[in-house]
Length: 218
Image 1 (cartoon, rainbow, N blue to C red):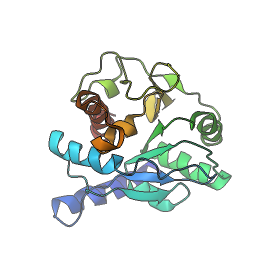
Image 2 (tube, helix red, strand yellow):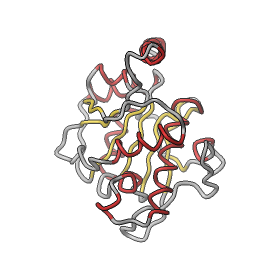
Image 3 (cartoon, rainbow, N blue to C red):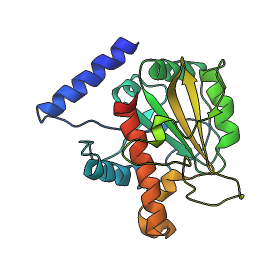
Image 4 (cartoon, helix red, strand yellow):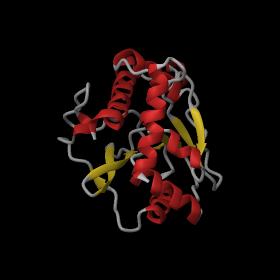
């Protein structure tokens, strides 16, 4: 499976060099009734920021990919968000597991209310793994932008600290879970949440670190 993903990623990269296409990232569509489609302007703004600050050549529009689709393997980085229920079938869980073991990277971004559901469903994907706090010295916090205290706090909900949690497989970070941070809200168009620009920049910088880590840091 790792070879399959590497081959697809190579094809995408090769087409970029020929000017025929650009690398794409995607939002994950899932079942269960939760609003997987939340944060509609988030990924396009993150893409624009990364293309400017990291000199990536990401396609300007977000893609949407279903968790059980083989198209999942076309995207090196997949973003998952929402406020509510999530349900993975066993087939979908197996597909997501193969994607992550094959070299893909999942960013789960709790938009407040996702947590109790996603923890159960990710147990279907990796019954042998637990989400753990990612150490502040981990490379994901030290790409182009330095976050010496870990993931930034973007939105306040219940007074809990922001946490960067991860699933590690054989020592490799394959899934980053931003909890009580709301990174995606900070990526949204500024007028939607009216966050101070300094906070919004921190969110975009942390997002850029995730993209950089996904492409280069592993």
